[in-house]
Image (cartoon, rainbow, N blue to C red):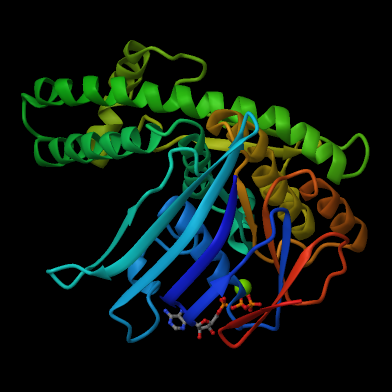
Length: 358
Ligand SMILES: Nc1ncnc2c1ncn2[C@@H]1O[C@H](COP(=O)(O)OP(=O)(O)OP(=O)(O)O)[C@@H](O)[C@H]1O
Ligand SMILES: [Mg+2]
């Protein structure tokens, strides 16, 4: 898929902007703090309805503005036939003073994959960041995944409440039982999708890493969960039963996808502990690039890539290899503080809330 003409109104540092991106590589170049990431964020919001930068949508409208709007054309070609949709996303004050994002016209095939400097935390950060990564990816593959995740969290919160409020009651086990069953049914669904997602990711990751890193170097990503290979709700319930005493002591649910993690290894050693900073950044970028093919297959069209400062801190050879790898993608937006000569790319200069082509 591709983004056609886009208009921003009162978004972040942009008062009003019209952009005509090219169908393949778009390089957004400009000094620091000029609005490059702001523009990528807006493009992501157009496609997905969310900001990849913040869960707080109230940060998106320009300071002092009452409403922010992003309007743009999304296109895809299927069997030689092009379809176009105009999508409009608006962030505005709700009646109660909170901010709300609304949107219409978003086609179900619209997908964007964003990479930013914070993604290095997928490799070297806490387990929650890796869970967030795998859930985001699984959500791009299986659109119901995020709704299942929300349901799981609701059940988990209720089960935790029962554990906290009735931990000393004789009837605790009976009270917990229905919640344990619901948690198990929803939990195994989540785990199964995450495992499928990780398997698809690993296949592509091996290929991407092969073209980015030293020959014979290997990266492996694996799903790590308390249930091991088991995929039945009964196994989940049994694991909860085994953890019962500890759960009562701590007043919280200790088994389930909310505690699982990914292991990421470079040449057999933990990338989190032993990877160099450059390697960790490279793995994080390779993970995002490895999403592209599975997402393309799931959505029926290639996602838009939003790569924020993806080349910084990397050596010249790594940069060259990455440029070659993204050359195989469809539409890409790549920000950079330094000019970058890349044949065939459209260049946009971002400066003080304005963008000029050329
Ligand atoms: N809601 C907002 N309203 C107005 N201005 C904002 C808002 N949010 C951020 N900004 C401004 O946007 C500027 C940063 O823009 P952005 O993060 O896009 O810079 P950048 O070009 O990506 O810079 P760098 O190269 O350092 O990453 C900030 O300096 C801030 O002043
Ligand atoms: Mg930036």
